[in-house]
Image (cartoon, rainbow, N blue to C red; front, side, top):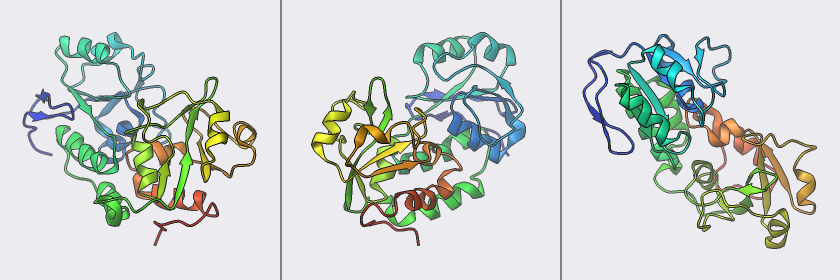
Length: 267
């Protein structure tokens, strides 16, 4: 670890961490896992939703959308790490007003994840860890350009009301690099509300149901798409952009096997 220079974050904002970062609060589960796997001694606070690695012992600061700003300020972190989608600008502004540097990641694609994670860790004063090298290697052949889609999928992420992956989402990009086109990639919204009946009418090759943010399972979700193939997948491996990327391709490929030809098989 060396001194940390001023750097621009994912939003292009200049962030000035102290010369040596010793105390970090993370407001995103993926970023929490990335720091905890790289330099666990730096992490002093995380959200209630930060579940990996299991057993991390840090101060909990509520959720991504309702963080306990006063508690975070009282922890006196050298840096808070956040995400443009997961966290509210109003909360981040309050932290900045208290004199706390805030690093915001912008991650909508797999290449953005690999680059953004490296820069976020550098802002913490950390060199690129081995798991990030392994993640880049695992996806190397599809990073420059996704393969042609072999299948089309609808990807609900919530019900009551039903919501699906739309345009410009990280999970949609991960699926694209596995050869699966998102049926709603052309939607005007990133997470449009779409009735299950509409999905049935459009007849995608399959429906992909992750177990987060809504906990879809064998008895909760597939019954709404009778007549369509339904794949239950790990939300962490589809939607998280940290150390899980080292195994995500293998695990997702296995979960999606048997639902038609795969154009990006795990070697």
